[in-house]
Length: 449
Image 1 (tube, rainbow, N blue to C red):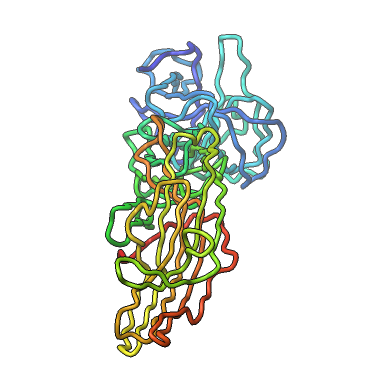
Image 2 (spheres, helix red, strand yellow; image 1 turned 135 degrees about the horizontal axis):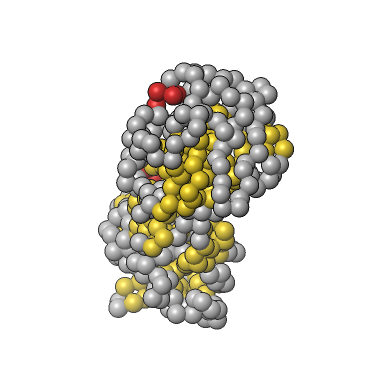
């Protein structure tokens, strides 16, 4: 609702040109009241950032109300807080169309539209009139007053649109503009960008999100569990994503196009992600075993139960102690050959078994292959990657998804030969010192082994 804040009249000395034709009976004008940050000359064509103090409406008064002696049209100043998208204390940047001699804290009135004006006014509430702004270097056109004294006149200050727009960034439906939220990697981040002014039309959106993000991860999928963010996702009014990595002070912003103008809003996130130590132990090679009457070439079981063992710490620090951890393994390439049959079995980019591979702090693998009657030689090569996965839990976590923390690349290759009616290990190779490295790249498979 409008609230009249002064009985003072704003006397506009209307000059030459078409501008005077705009101020007709019944006309109202809306704009921002701003103040300058410092005193001094602001050169023509430069930019100045001004704090928004309030908003105003200039309304044509009825005939014969508050008449002035010189016959100049009179207008009254109102505040209209409900109609405008910005709030006091926010700022807007203007590009000057004149050399402006400004004093610190001076109040200026800027009119909405494709031009910005400075208007002088009279006060009867003890305030000071704004100081004059010089016209040195001023490029007049038909839209300006013919007076140099803007305390009683109207002057064009800028040729750019001075209209500021209030952009609201909402996180999970709640206003988060200018705020900082603490979230965990793997928690869904649903955001929306809204223009808090229904009378203006947004013609485009452009999100900017730092870090490694993804749209979704379905660990139960038979193939391609990872859904990536697309360029189209970044140009909608809403966006939902997950962070795979961590980091503090991440500014997420959205630019809105309104006509030819661009406005933006932002919110900030501190993304928490645990650091979990992982150790790896390997056995000394392949061996021949027998199980249920069938012999196998197998990696491991010599010095330890498995060919390779992965162990994560059980000392989980706050705030991750109630979150979930599991293992997932991808067979990058598995090749097996049989002689004399000449049969080759090739497995590529396959999820090993299921997800999770294991959800215990320790797990292992010992690839093997049966040595059937009639074979004279069998070889098996495996190249794999084991992932430590993480999924946050808690009431503040939104639709959690698995994210990768660690990755261990490893391989083994063994050859068994049938010699003198006995299977023997002919050769054995394996990763001597595989290490766990940090990763933000999900295990993404095309088949399941």
